[in-house]
Structures are given as structure tokens and as C-alpha cells.
Length: 120
Length: 107
Image 1 (cartoon, rainbow over the protein chains, first blue to last red):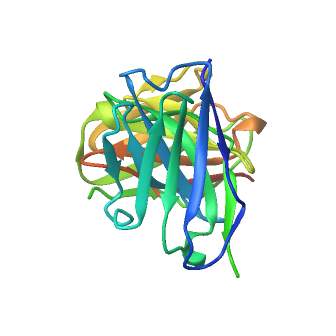
Image 2 (spheres, rainbow over the protein chains, first blue to last red):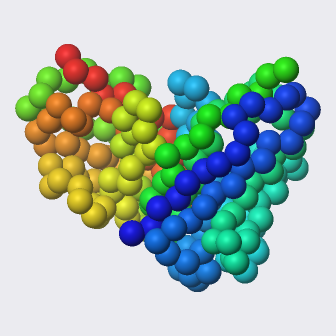
């Protein structure tokens, strides 16, 4: 059974770059059937898709965040990563990684999520 | 961009009652690309329904999904105490997006 686990700093200063990694266990990130995704949820608010990556390195980003987002994959470590630049307080959120079925784009399973706070 | 609007924002019901949650899309969505998730406090969302009407693995049969085009519905036939949570619909058009959620609370 595939499991995902986010890791990274819980506090980032304004204007800096947020960096998170998702480690996949119980399955290969190189499976061609899935996209590997980042989704965030500001405290008390709804879900926002950030983007995803295919094992080959092809990426797809939310247009509203595209200028600040980079998602990369390391198949040798079975990990994928998120970088979000020039962060502000509005980027404070729980960040989830999730697997998306490539054919239909629904998300399952999800990591437990990690809270990232943007504050000086 | 396809916008999903969920209603009501909050639904107050008692255990044993039937819950009907609505998700309306700003333009037509293929049923294959419509999913529902349940989120409990402090937890990640969990996939409930995919393809508008198929239950995910381990989801009880009191949960059902229906709809097509721009109007989709999640129905919980008889509410159990563990069903009180927030529910999100999600679509994939040119890019994925989520509805704003419906909070199902105990009356």
C-alpha cells in the first residue's frame, strides 16, 4: 500500500523560498500511471491544487501560482519536491502531497500534511 | 478555469438522517473527472467517490454519488457519528480544482 510523507521546515521567512519533499513508500514513483501532486490548505480554508509532476519530469502547475512554483522528482530516492519562491503570509498553509491517477486526476492517497508558517 | 460551487456551506443533521450535498460546476465536467473527498479535523482528505458515482476502496455503501454535466450530488443515506466532517468535490478540466467545501455538523 502506497504511503506518502511530507518533510521540510515548518517556518519560512517572508520573501524566502519554501521547500518541501514528499517521500513515497510502498510503491515506485516511476509508475507511468500516476502524477505526483502538491495541494495546500490555508488554516480554516479549502483546498488548492499547486501542481504535479510525472516521473519523466513533465510538470503541470496551477496558473495562479505558476510563476513561483517548481516541482521536481528524484526517482532514485522515490521522492518529489516542491519549491515556492517569494513567499508571503498568504502562503501559510498545510501542504499535502498526494498521488493522482494520470487518466482521471483524482487524488489518492494523501500524505498527512505539514504546516508551513510564513513569518519573520 | 472551471469553478465548483458547493451547497449548502453548512448542513446540520442528526445521526440516522439522510444528507444530500450539492456540487455545481461553472461548465460541463466529464463524470470521469469528478471526485468527492471527506476531511475530518486534523486529517488529510480521503477519497470517497471517483468517477462521480464509484465508491473508493473501503467506503461504506451508505455513501453514493450521482450527477452529470454541471450538477453532481453526494448522498449519505443514514448518517453515522463518524460521517460528520467537511466534504469537498473536485474536478479535472484543464487543471484540477476543488469546491469550497460543505461542513456537515451534528444538529
